[in-house]
Image (cartoon, rainbow, N blue to C red; front, side, top):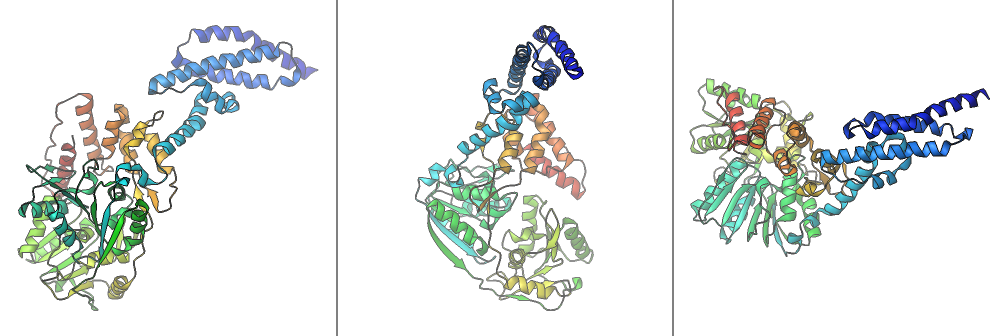
Length: 556
């Protein structure tokens, strides 16, 4: 009896508060309703705990509070819609989880149930179960694909380029700007008007029928008679592989030449057969044998035509400084080196102006050089996540640069480490692990999905599993970092999508700040042009940063 009286008193208080609460809420702005919404749910919870008492007028009071919660929640949802440009309907959201709505509120149900379900449905509708079906124009074509597979320095790309030069129109798709530039010059020197299109620049030639570009700049809307895709093994690369996958699936071209390593064969065949393409495979073998030197290499034993490989910029620069202090001219190659400077270094080595090449594994994909011997100064590398041993494919890719055909009869491979010869020999003789998955990137179809910010759509896309086991999503962490950084500008999604794709080191605080300054100047303050970066010094690191800022500058 005592418990009943306590419940009756609590019920009477809640009952008397209903009309006053209705009046307060009616005069409260939508943006200030959050506390009222929480208080209403608390009262409804309290009322439900009183149901056992069979209080007089209980149903009327309970329904009154639920109706008031519905009114408040609908206003909050409309406020949410106005802020985000969405159009979620109260009845649809609540119907999804009525009990959860009463317990956790409208926005909780919206975010945890309604939006994810709608996004999954939209993702399924916008993105085909099989990625090949995202390119219907290419699927309507009968494509002939010639696959050139073999080791480094075997003439794969040379033969494909020869065919490209015979075509009325065509494209060469390179992994590096320096390779696009090399073939751009080759085609133009042979009387074939060709454009150069990379992330850094465009060189347009009047009447151009061909284009040489970095693979990310491929224009799928343009038809070609012949296309060459180089270094197809990059299709499995976590950061850049999506560009190769996009090219293989989306090129509208009757004749495609694909060049790369043998370990790409099983994956590539599966994809091409799935596309219904006619496929021909041409295998290439080295004409110049590779010989591993048993004796460890000592740095004092360097000779003309040697290429010394280290796996960090610091290691490369220290080696180059050592040799230059002894009067030995060296060419230096590493990933951060601007393409024009890299090309000058190549030319010095080709001409004999420098006698020794000191390089990172960037040499594995690059211009063929007159290298007599490749020397590994390290047999491990840091891959961005951990320090690990080199894979057999990495060793083959780098070692294969030794013994250029027509210049040397034998290519030599050596290591500075004791026992390194045995490791190198095992890698060169090993059968490479076949590539298992092609990497997919987000497409502009994300922009057609409404109801979530681009960042959340991208994150949801990245964790949506692929139905086919031979595809996987790319690592989108860098894209998310850019979207987080530019979020305060509230840019239209198409602009944000383009900005997140810009190729720069997103973990560099200085470069990220430069991007934000350019976004503010160009999109917010509507300046006709962004300010050109200023040179801040003449140290190597200063010049590298200046070059990277220039690349961002030319993106606006």
